[in-house]
View 1 (cartoon, rainbow, N blue to C red):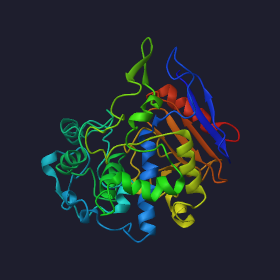
View 2 (tube, rainbow, N blue to C red; view 1 turned 135 degrees about the vertical axis):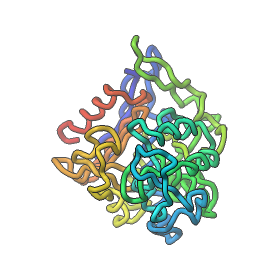
View 3 (tube, helix red, strand yellow; view 1 turned 30 degrees about the horizontal axis):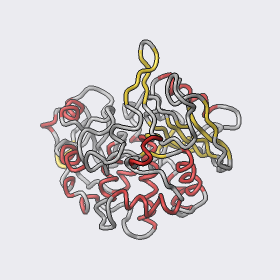
Length: 351
C-alpha cells in the first residue's frame, strides 16, 4: 500500500511510513491531502461559530439563504415514484443540514430518486464534483426529498448545501468564511478548496486497488484540486495537511474555535432513534454509533464519547473523551481493506 502519515496522543508528534507512490519517494509529513468527507467537521465548526456569534441560529430555515429550497417536495417513502411527491410539511433548517437530516443525501438502494440523482449528476460517489455550486444546487433542488426534514437520515449532500449557505451570509465567499471562523484562529495555513500553484508539488497522486495492484486514479501535482478551481466549488471538499488538521482538532478540543458547550453539542448524538433507518448508510452503521454535527459519535462500549470521521481517500481521525487525537492520512480510495485497516487502528489498546 502507498504510504501514510499520522499522529496520536495529546501533542502533535507526526510520523510517516512508506512512499508517495509505488516505487516513489518517501511520503513527507507536509504532504497536502485530499481530505474528502473530513471537510464536514470543518464546515460544521464554521457554522457553529456563526451560531455562537449570533449570525445564524440552528433552527433558522435555510430558505433565507437558499431560496432554491424554499418549497421542497417530499416522497411518501424513499423509493416512491418521483411524481408522487407532495409539499414538505416543515422547512429545512440549519440544524437539519448539520445532522444530515435535510432529506437530501445518498440513496443506498436502487430507486427512482437515486436514478434521477445519477441523471442530474448530483449522485455522490464519483468525486470530485461534476457541477459548479449553482448548477449542483439547482439540480438537487429540482428533485424531491427522500423524507420529511428531520425525520430521517441520509449522508453527504446536506454539507454541500451548508457550504453554499456559508457563502451567502454576506460575510464573503465560502472559503473566506472558513478562513475567518476556522483556519485563521486554528493556525491552519495549508487548507483550502485548492492547492496554490507554488505548492502543488506537495499534492500526491491518488491510488485505488485494482486486480493487479494499485492503479493511479488521480495524478500528482495536477487535477481537480490544483488551483485554479474549474468552477465555484463551495459545495465541494477541502485539501489539508496532517499539521493543519491536527491544529483544527486541537483548537476544537481546547475551545479556541467554538465554545466548550457548542463543542459538546457537536460530539453528541443528535439523531433520534426513529430516524436511524437500516438503509440510511452502509449495513451496521448505527450499531453503537450516532451522528453529531459533522462527525460520528461512539454511543456505547469502551470508546463511548469518541468522535471522528473518515474521508473517502484514506484519511481518518478521532478524538477521545480524554482529548487524545488520532489522525491518519493516505491517498488510497476507501475499500474493504482500507476500511478494515482503519477499523483496526480504532480498536488498538490505548487508541
